[in-house]
Amino acid sequence: MYRSSLFLLFILLVFLCSPGVHGDFEQVDVFKAGELGYKEFRLPVLVVTNKGTLLAICEGGRTGSDFGDRDLVMRRSEDGGRSWSEIKILRDEGRITCANPAAIVNRKTGRILLFSTLNAKRAFVSYSDTDGLIWSTFREITPVFEEFRSEFDWTRCCTGPGLGIELNKGKYKGRYVLPVWICNDDKGKYRSGVIYSDDKGLSWHRGGAERPLI
Image (cartoon, rainbow, N blue to C red; front, side, top):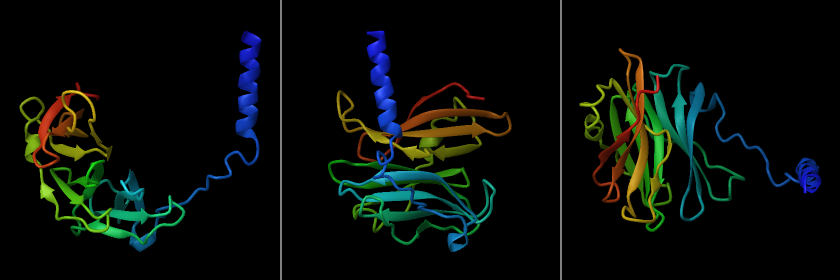
């Protein structure tokens, strides 16, 4: 049995390393440093819409600093990533830091929620009902982070980055859950946690928070 298992593993490795096995995969640089004057792109979020469209959303930084002039930018692909649209700027507040994109997709209605922060002090959410073509104005949801303050006196708050989920089973079916993190720069302490919504993103509440990571 041991020799048979090793033989099968060997065959699998030979297959995976054979030319042509990965022929269907091709690297595509969706964002390239220097485009539209951005020095860098970071914290990417890749969303697959109900129509199969890919939305690549990230921060576009005019400088290499975590702070300063950073915008939210997006590219769309309607052919599985073979080609991409021009960069669309979703939020530009001048020298303010627009950062930490995160998203949740409603698999029934197709609505896409996009979360972000300004200067890591205020949190916002926008949505699209048009497969990412048109987005609503950003609505502030910072008060949900204030619900953590009695337990952890944060100086910065951030949504995501990454993807949230919609629960599809059990007592809390339909609940949106989004990862977040908060930190206290003065004490050098960080915490990760979640916020949640039971009304499809209209209102948000604090969930659990882990002990300080650092």
